[in-house]
Length: 534
Ligand SMILES: [Zn+2]
Image (tube, rainbow, N blue to C red; front, side):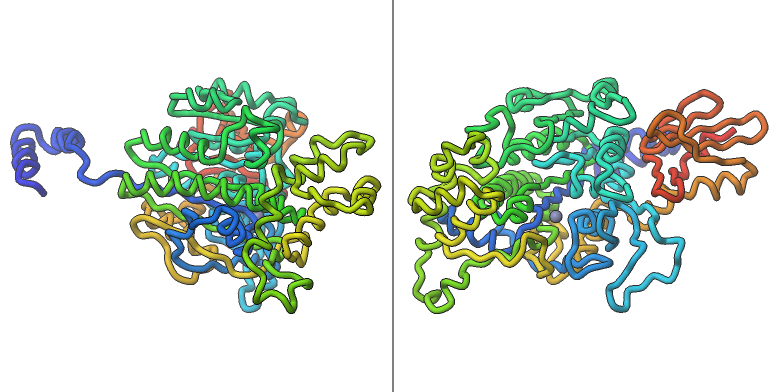
């Protein structure tokens, strides 16, 4: 305690008693700035894609400066994870099954990791964003895919299947996140339950933006940016195809600027979503484009962390994808004297990704040669041009032709199970060789909460809890596609809608500190409901 603070404290004890002291102490300037975490995921990015991006750029990446270790990515049911299970691991500290988001697994095949308690299956578990919110921090999520896609969903929601994008959208809207930037506007307005979530977002006081220039001008502490019906364009395509969309670095920068106004600090999740999509298509141009765009966002985050001094930055991929390799069957004998140029020069000719180039393809494919040229294929033989013109999978054929010219190999159109690099920066940042589930533990510890305890308070079994107190409970379909948990006892009638943070007691609504979840079997609510019972 400083001398000045000691004197102030003694004075206020003498003059005011302890209540006045607390007030006076609260006005003392902060000696330590609040703790922030920026968690960044480049989806589906094998180290081969990062190495190629570095050669393509011609100098070190921002990521290269903060390499600190390695991460194991396997899921509860496979040596190769999907993005939903991976996001659940990275956000909640629990390995789970394919498609599950924020729920415990029902099937565990990992040797020696069986869970004997059948009650654990499908149970919701708290994520680091929910924890940050509980300790008073501002929160944000940013992605280049639909914001309802598996990875951002893993950091904000709880659903049995990543395909429930309408449920994910609704949970995100009622989760109380301060900054949400990405694509996926279609899931806000074109919905089976007929709710217009865009209106709800505006009613909740968010500044709504849907272009790059509006985002730049936005100055509210709550911003919802939805820049595309589905995903945003690949970075290399954007200037030509979607110039009104922001870059990932711009979204990251705005999110940091906005969230850092909170005196309690912030948690921000950022995803470079479409590296994974390009990898599924073996489109090396898309992969490099968005690794470099992600790297620019990392540069923004680390620059802020350097200035701030109390911000932990983590960057990692959730899993490998495509088995990309520099070198393929045709370099089996020539690899040792194949110069960098032979890999990179063919790629440099491309002006667009496969997705971006195909947007210009005419229906009769009369311009297939020009489209191939956009993808860097400027010296195709007549046979190759004819093949593309009549191909049933023209995108895959374009990718394969470029890979061959650049001496690149792919082993699969799916994910892969290798370990991945860990990049981190700032105080208490994680280092060494870790399980993906250890990263959220480190983040939670740094921000000052415990994920397991949080799960127990945010997700109590509603039926068990209310029936213990003598209520009769039901789960009913009140309006189409919207489930409601009801509990009645004498004159008291309670309704809790799924996917929202609302409880209605005898017609009067209250906000809860968390969203209510139906996992297909049971209904879960925050234990805070007890405060609203008569
Ligand atoms: Zn993924």
